[in-house]
Image (cartoon, rainbow, N blue to C red):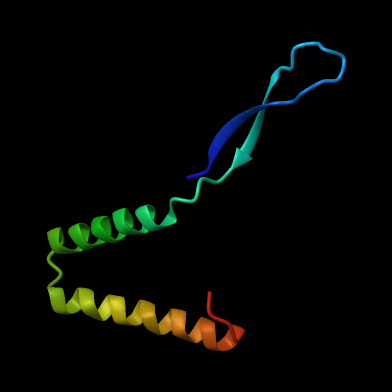
Length: 76
């Protein structure tokens, strides 16, 4: 989730600057992906999915990403 960072703009007139909200994304995607994957796994297990079915989901996700990479001709 993006976080708002407050920055001060300096002014040449010597007057105090008012804080300005600047939107910036804090790169915590690896942590977020870990939390998301654990949540999805837990939710699926609680809803009766077997590990084999969860592996099938993961395999399908990998397949979709692989297709995107092939179409784009790049690897991010």
